[in-house]
Image (cartoon, rainbow, N blue to C red; front, side, top):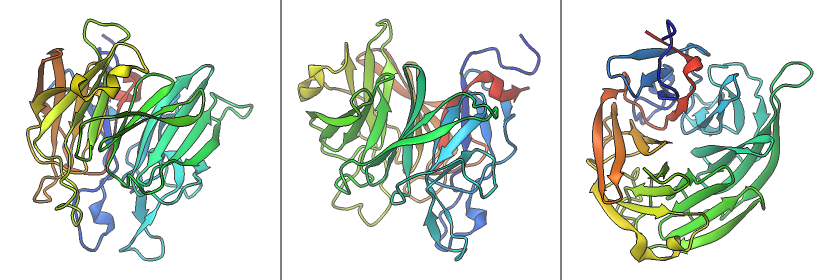
Length: 347
């Protein structure tokens, strides 16, 4: 084992940005500036992020591992430069920890306060696919280095996907390096980078809005993917508050190949274990055959430090487990993603 580095490959969970309390009058004290790195394999092991000491003050941003440079942050919202107690939307991309006023890239959309993102390693290029709370999509392409030895970012596409029809009540996951799956109540859509278009994929028997989902490896079946959805919202009674994940059944389906007609058959979905608690504005991370739900706040608006892990031994033998590892600071609307081992120094 190399001194100072964790011995497991890609088992480090980075959690950064977000808010630590729900203030009526927001202030800088509401934001989380600490960057946490948690070893998902060792319960007693804490790590330090080596690319930055603290994060910029932003919530609801999307993050991605940006080559060897660090973590790229895009979108979200921040406190207004002109009215400190008011939010303003952030349409900029910058590196985690960069507090300068010069963004690496400016997004076309300035509507959605919450973003989700996935990296697609497609052909000879890398792409950062972004979707905001109002279904606007952005596609960012990056190269490795240019003549000035700097990373290249290029916004190559911006699309108003479905307007405000599915405002906030959806989740996305990455099927493979070409396909993103969006699940919004009973509507499923697939984005394919080869054709740069959205295609309706299915109408499933899921009547609640979905908040946490994952595209996971199917144990023992190389090339197969497992789609996992949990949570929901009663649209009639929760529109005046933050939606929370109700402790409802988890829905599971296996894709032997993709696209697959199995998605068009609601009977093909299996019910899994009940999610353990009420939770809102947490972050979800898919990694190999597990789905992790991180942070968020409960029905009483108390910030949470717990990390929940969903995994299966077989299709019908699945469970939610509260991990021994947890956040040092409870937070919501944060960026959470798996990072390479060389991005952190682990004691």
